[in-house]
Image (cartoon, rainbow, N blue to C red; front, side):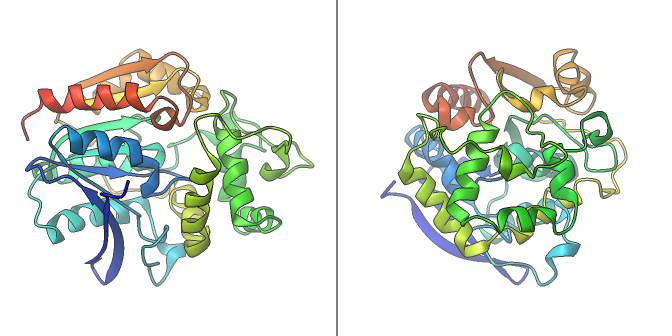
Length: 313
């Protein structure tokens, strides 16, 4: 971890916090989800650098140590597509592998679709190709206490989270999202009420890890995170039948609650997802949760490096 270098890179007027390790000519860029941050990739960055690649992870705008945009409530996932492409340009990187986790998977695939010249291949964890828009997640097929439905309602998550300190919010979400069940609150509950304080952190997530996450979210807060991805997930993206034509790998934990989203498992297992990503390989990790890369880092690292070594960047 001490060898990871930190800097700020200006991209379209915003200073983005960038973490980097390794000096290889081939570049791998890691894209975090929520409630994650650059730090979520600590194990993968070091492994990829040791395998001869240049590993970069950054905090998306509005997250961690990166600047907030002037009008966060107008932001969409497509802004992150532009941000990734512009960051590569700012760093003088002509082509990279993109690795996205959780909502970070969405712009990873879309950069490959919209700017194919910039992307050598794509790896995602927990989320397959998804197109932002009204049918991205079919909330209406889940109970009204579904966490995404709750967090899409302006002000509701802010009031819910505001009852706790930032560290407690991150702890609660990490524990809830580590389960195999979709987080759903009852009519008289908020999402934070689902947390049972007697349940410890997962064994693969230390108090030190929690402190690292909390310190970064204490800096940024949750304002932008609630907008992107949650409140902008249904915004039309302007793309018609995009295709990702580079090699792609999807790593899914079989205990990942996202597999229980309506239609999700069928979409992946039947190969319907290959309509958008024809050259897709899917690998399941039997006991893997939504945080499979932190839960089983060696296993995930090996899968990533095996895939990278097969590609020509």
